[in-house]
Amino acid sequence: MRTTWAILIALVCTSIPALAKEDDLIVPGAHIGRFKLGDTQQKFRAWLGKPARTFKTHAQRSVDVWRFEVPSDELEVVYEARKAVQIRTNIERFETKRGLSVLADLAAIKIAYPQLKGIHYYLNGESGDGRKYWDEVERGIAFEVWQPWKEDNKERPYFVIVHPKGRNAIPTDISDPSNREPGPVRRVRRAR
Image 1 (cartoon, helix red, strand yellow):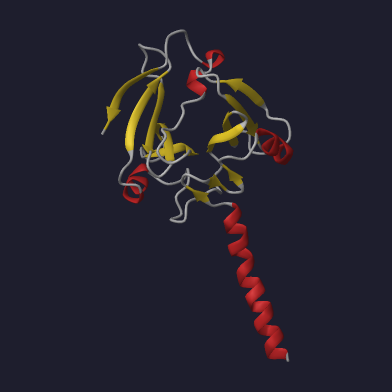
Image 2 (cartoon, rainbow, N blue to C red):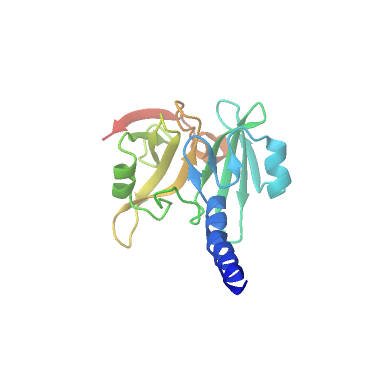
């Protein structure tokens, strides 16, 4: 009887980390943790409360942004017809099955996602200030890179983005007129 209890306790204890890990899993084209593409705006707001910020993209998609305990931690959701079509986060605990998160360097990400294509989006037509998205469109995952980290000069993503398979990631902040200098948002060139 004691052996049975010991085995049962061991099984329960070893399965708890796996359950917690599932809540932090990034699945390309599907979800980040429990936050799923296709979930309604109402559902996100019921889970997370009032967003810290709400705005519309240049294509009139609604965007909600939540900020958490650590001031720079964000979860951003883009909606079409009040359903999530993109989820973007920089929260370190979210990671892919391969252990990739915003802490991974771009070289490791490119090995895991060999079909990534780089696209630059600029805030205006003249400055180099903008975002570089490394997007594997067919799998539904993108990584937003701003600049190399000063500590080791390696490029790391600032955000991980999950979007529907076969659709490009949607640049959001740069298309919000209150967040950019005058000038059109332009796709400038493909990075290699």
